[in-house]
Image: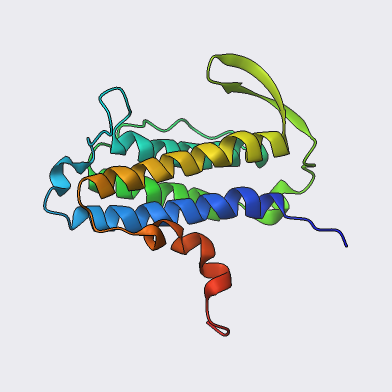
Length: 177
């Protein structure tokens, strides 16, 4: 028996769940007594703040659309600093993802290659599966987890379910829901 997973589900689906999780985290952050300062929260002085973690998740989702759906998109300013601005950015990214249909990724073989910049390495040749599974999704999940951890560190009431519920909801929902 062979098994396949669609490029769409592994990219747009995972990104959508990550962004929906960020919306949930941002909603809880906005209700916290220290909401006004949470966007600049850092785990350690040389680490990026919460606001940048959110922007990076958004940018990885956007880059998946650009690279895997072959779209040339305008640059986004990446200047969101408040929780309200970050929430709007996540909505903007989700709106972008809604414009991508599974057929937009048709023709992409997991072995098809393209060029990208990975840190100081420019250009790097990567297959779609290498890019998605070895770079984009791990980075997306890393920065989502750091965003979660930063809020948790500041006392926002969060648990593991807050991080995972949007990912597991598809198969944990009761039948007929």
